[in-house]
Image 1 (spheres, rainbow, N blue to C red):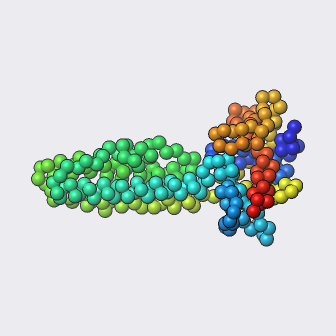
Image 2: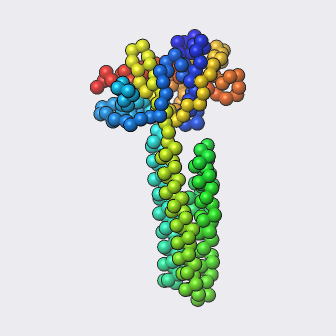
Image 3: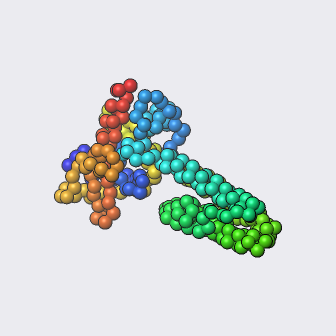
Length: 275
């Protein structure tokens, strides 16, 4: 049985990208929220920089990026940038509807709230964060109301009631659109505030480092079955040769990936010696 699979001590269970991992507590010194990061040059992209814990400096390894997937920070930045674009599109949608009424030309933008880029994302996006989920639900009514405006406004415009049509557009702009703008701002702020990565301080014989993970789930014993599990698995979905072992958590159907800390620590040492 490999050194990192000893069952004498419990394992620290942590999550990364909706996957559950285990690290033997024999290698864990402490856990804390990721503090301020000092960026350093000439290191692999998965080394985010260094952190200072009570005078001790540790390289911070991003577990996501070490496995070849986007970091949580990158993921949130991409999502907030996308939401900013969706906000801009709805402002332009209202402006175009108003211009079409004033200039008496055809409105060619989409009117189905489920067909716009935001609507498609909104209908399919899933989150385990209850705060984010509750805030997202607030988009439903104003978003549908904005898109429903087109049919009503264009009908009034066709009847020659241009002033009435423009009044409705202005009411939507100062009402539902303003509500959506505030919600876009709120959800982006919440996404950044809830990005509470945890740094696990890992102590090895030859070095120590900090490992950034999405969250810590539990500390518990893990029964490691010899049969049917192979160490040094290549988890191709992560795009890296991941040195670990897949087991079932506490004899349940939930899969748990046990991590070899030397796979990470050896890479950190290699990066340091290459400088």
